[in-house]
Length: 314
Length: 101
Image (cartoon, rainbow over all chains, first blue to last red; front, side, top):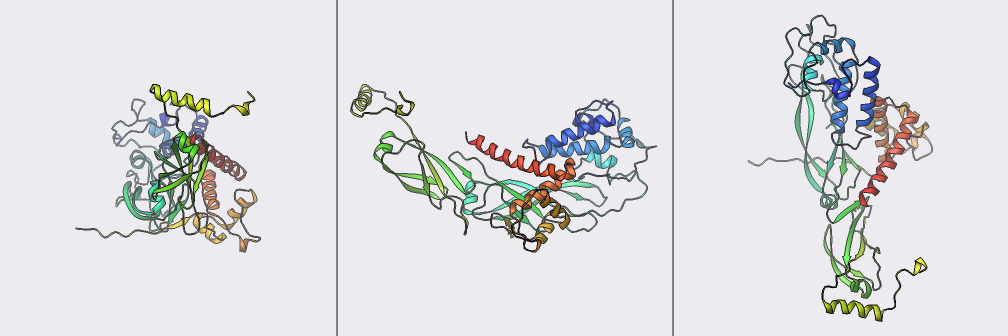
């Protein structure tokens, strides 16, 4: 198993006082709390800090841990020396608090419920927990609805009472018109309780990607549409993409850049709620490359009286 | 060999979701007293005049769950949770805006 450097995880030195350990833990926990942090791996770091604190806050566990010496590096392959825990009084104590799901093998075999040094097997029953997960689905799947297979890793208790994580697959219906931040609850699919306690719910929260063409804002889908100056000036009927396929759109004559056109019902809609596609016009000016093209622009300058800066008072 | 797959249809928590006090307690694994305290501190705002008629939105469900975790994990008290939740929502809006620009 891999050695865990609990001091490094909390960013403290090995001679830290109990107060310093507590302060360091609170700081790391606030920084990486999954509800607060947007950092990648926030949850992993939050759990690692919880595990480190679980050991270091308890003087007995800390002293036993310190006996391994200061020369181990985090992630290094590690086997505890025989009778490493002789003379310490935390046998079978397991966890004193905190969310133990997902603690490392290192923790489990040394300090956890699976701690084999204890003379008596600890029988425990723990309430099942809600499990929370975030899944990224494509904008198309949100638009049409879809069926998806999710793989979650969840802790299971094996026959020896040790906690292992194992992948768990779920086949789930994603309803049409689901939007960012909404959640789907699957009854009885959360983390099972230990000792026969029933599992609770699994909540998964929808995240939508920022596509190359589209982005979603609540139920509305946005698209930036590049158009030529003459299409803006004279009006045009153009074919444009939506999540549901290509459609025709009318650009009114005299449209300016930034103008927004709304395609009703072309966003993320459900039976009761309509989402639209919002098309923002972006006027793209062609470069004058040849003498003739430059002449055309000059002719426009002469024939079309136009001051784009009149609002600036100049 | 083809595997027969059953797809689970979950409960979608969206803007149409309205749940009762009992539902909210069950969904969040807390008792009614905790919900009362959260309402008092402004963590959530029910629709409806009396506890029997209270209805909660999907946002309330999420706020209660987050508040429970913040209390357990970071030892934030209830007024602190209400503040943190409001700031988190504001932060989320700002992040969305900054992604667009």
